Each structure stands twice: as structure tokens, then as C-alpha cells.
Length: 150
Image (tube, rainbow, N blue to C red; front, side):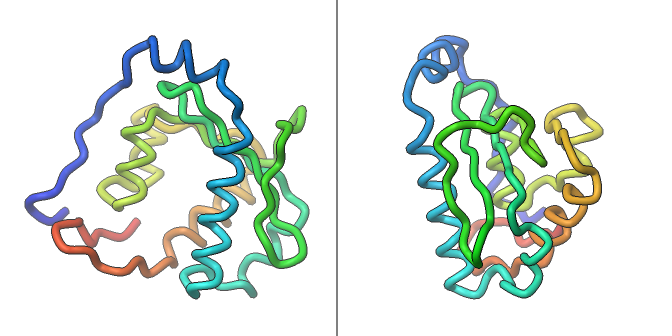
């Protein structure tokens, strides 16, 4: 990890989750699907490597915020799901700090998983595929952010 920028482990107050679970969740799904499609359009995600994701459902839960986003990949695009399937193909559950640490590559998913900061539930092979896809992303370098890889 580079010096300077570091996201500490934190947990949002319980009140945030208590309120968050009662708010509409579809905006989260729409925002995440839009961000993933933007990454695809910018070439950060390789479309030919996404074929195995076709028709699969994904759930991302930010536990301490009480929020969740559900989406699928179909027809070459990420699409929000406005209802959570009974059994998504792959679910990721963590507190906000863990997801932020993943985003800036301060921590890798394996470390967070073994520290019980990140729960991954569902199709194991699909989980490894998604991890490898994310690891292959070459994020634009922003000043002050760590440049570590998974």
C-alpha cells in the first residue's frame, strides 16, 4: 500500500442501518448497474470476459448502511433488478468500509473474506470468476490513492 491515503475500518452507527433498510433499494441497483455499464463503455471491463456472467444474478449488501443492490448481466449490459431473487447466484455482504477498501485496492477480497469482513455466498466458481475480472481492471491512477493489485 502506498503512503498517504488509507481507509480505516469503521462501522456506521446502527441508526443508519435501521433507517436504510426501510428506504427504497432500487436506486442502489440502478446506480451500480449504471456504474458497471460505464466501466464497460470505458473499457475497464472486457466484454468478451463477461460472457460467463450472462443471465446470472448478483446481490451486493452494505450491511451497516442497510442498503442493497441487485443486478444481472444480460445481452452485453448490466441491468438493475428491482426485486431481489430468492437465491441470487452470487452475494457479497460487507460493511461500507470493506467495500471502500476493495474499491481503492487497499485490501484484497481474500484478506477481507478470511478476516470475516466480507461474506461471499453462492456459486464458488462464479465468485472466483468475478474476483479475477475485478483484479484485471486497470483503474485510472488518481493522486494519493494506493495502486495495489489484488
